[in-house]
Amino acid sequence: MSSKRVPDALDVAVELLKRREGIDKTLKLIRYAAILVASETSSSSSSLTTNFSTRLTALERSIGDARRAYRLGKFLGNVAEIRDELREGSARGVSRWRSARTATVACAALEGAYYFMEQGVWLSKSGVAMREKTTRERLVRWSARFEVCSYAFSVLCAREDWLEADARGRAARRALFDGASAELRAESGSARGMREDDVEELRTTIAECDGAKREAVFSVIQDVTDAVLSFEDAVDVEGVELSNERLVNVLGLLAAVLDFHGKLSSAIASVREKNR
Image 1 (tube, rainbow, N blue to C red):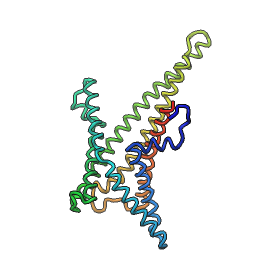
Image 2: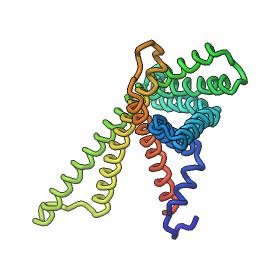
Image 3: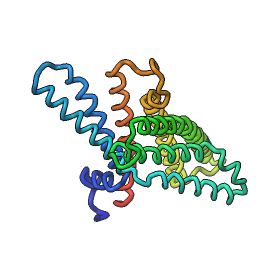
């Protein structure tokens, strides 16, 4: 890729779809869009509309199975994340037990358990192993429970990220304000003003912190939405469910859009970095 060429939509699409997460979130967006459209058109008496709804339902079920298959071994990434977190804690002089009690490790462990159970659900639905209906239902239930619990700790991690970014942003704003005050004093000959490079660096830091805070907010909204959608399967109690099908479908599409937005933003940033 030439460093002089301006990146376009094709570059971003290639960067997005060459990653496992990019493909997974793209499939998620397509699936929940298909669910919503199929639900809205299923009540029509037209044979053409009914056939269209049936095809969309088949598509979303196929994507659901494909996403589970595509997650093969994904839990190993969570295991590596736990290992790295414990190593970093040891390097800082923190005991392994204390490092293991952090929200980051808890989130990674629960998310890894969820991905591991999802492989069992995939094998069960495909008829390879654990083909009994009761076994499959238990797998789905425990998978959903691990997923919901992981979202709770993910919200805590996002909160910590927001607080850290807010503290850095406040410090940069104070430094910029103090620099502006020094600049005014420099004009009167009583002090030396800030260098232009320092001002630009502080402004960049402020922009980065604001972006990190926005991403943390999006992450919380996404986690809460996904947790609501998985709560029914996790509890599996008669009467504990979202009865409004349209609301459930809209929430699913919202979660998919937020997920896709995060991966798309990451792909765009990666392409821009390569073209610098």
